Length: 374
Image (cartoon, rainbow, N blue to C red; front, side):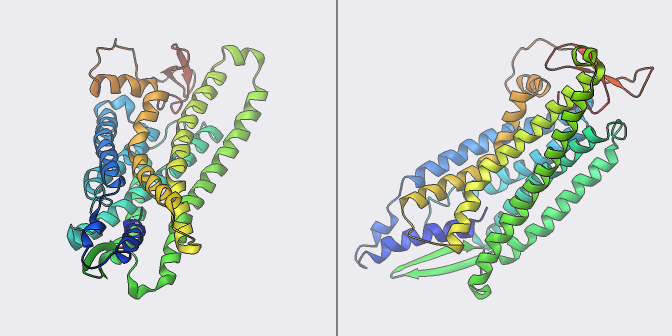
């Protein structure tokens, strides 16, 4: 997300108003538009829902040892990045359409831009890592039967380090910039330093679109195409009895279910971030008339990019009965009946373990990766 670009777009609208007024009538420039009230309301909902949802997800995984598996550790990393953004950045960014200038100073300006880029990097790179992890689980099930927690934690640490390094560009570039419009002096948090030239604005928009969107989505899509091919071939090779009651079929179905959860996260990410990237590319590469369509499109894309930080827990609630059980217990305080979520145990005949099947409600056997996220 780019507050500088958002503020510049907002500034251009504000400037048009100012240019059509006399110095004796500056108060009209301060007339609040609908988004001055709607955006803070939306962001207040994002704050409440995001803190509750992501906080409960993190607590659930840390509270219950049986939930600490590779996909869930990645989900905790994803939720932590979203929670950090929501707690620190959302309160300041929520007023960007309410105030005609940045009132929080240079330190908050740099911190805000850094955290937004950090959270975005953690989100998209974690989704990429989840896609790779699911591919390995399906393509090489025996090698993935007992994934190393240390390796998972190292991968999470690497994701945060890379995201922080990439986000440092935003902290370096962000600065307070002053604009004079007649008798009105505006102060904005700008991520495009004027001394860096207009070429940097185009580079920055394209850089974020490629690094934080296009390349990761292509990588994830490649993993899923390979997974689909493997699953189709495996399904055609299963014997008739395996399709009805065999452990291989149940194992495959569970892995497919986990892959669908990850794919849902990716689809939500695309839906939330594509409008934002579309607007920024248009604004910097082919700026036409800034009319009401683009104004509304900009605000919707701006809000969606933050909404992405609070919707993943809802996806888990819908698709995972195990997470739904814990959300009902901790978040909604529902008096739900206890389900027997037993820990996976090794069988005597192979490196397999039991899990509670979400789709059938019965116990079955699979590799240790198959019960994840159920």
